[in-house]
Length: 239
Image (tube, rainbow, N blue to C red):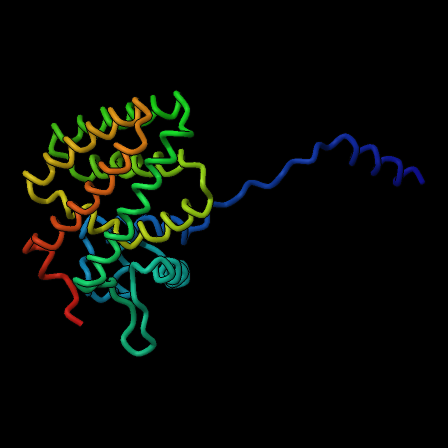
């Protein structure tokens, strides 16, 4: 009886401490491999050697294979039972059509965002814009691209439409590497910066029609830059 009472007292005196959530290793691997694909370290069509990747990343095959499944679901890599894994390629027609579709999603996001965005969200986007310009001045394309994508993402979030959000994220995963490559040419990069200046002005004015038109043209010009770039052209699937 005495032991029971002591046990109850000890239990009541001990606070319920939740266990810490462990960051899943494959999540880190997913992010790392995704960045390597986006930044063209791993180019379209290249085969992914599991042994070499495990040695380079210092991991076992289990988290690597889990990460590959995620990237395959996102359309970034292809996994074949007989040929292994390789970075996905898009045909010229697929690039054309996907950018065309994405331009519509971006345009609709801009239209809705102008109706629903908060002053705080506009301030956050402007801060990202200035940080993006600083990266451009330093010729830091990865830093520029990261902030660029955050701007587009925040505009999409500000649209407050769950279906639009889910579709946008799914399609954009397949285009991230190509959007990064669209600024390989200095002239195209300069044009993209001017278009972002116009986006900020339209957003501040809450001019949905103007922002919608800017975003649509912005994405179509990215498509044209990708398809006209000889460096990118050599990586486009001819299948």
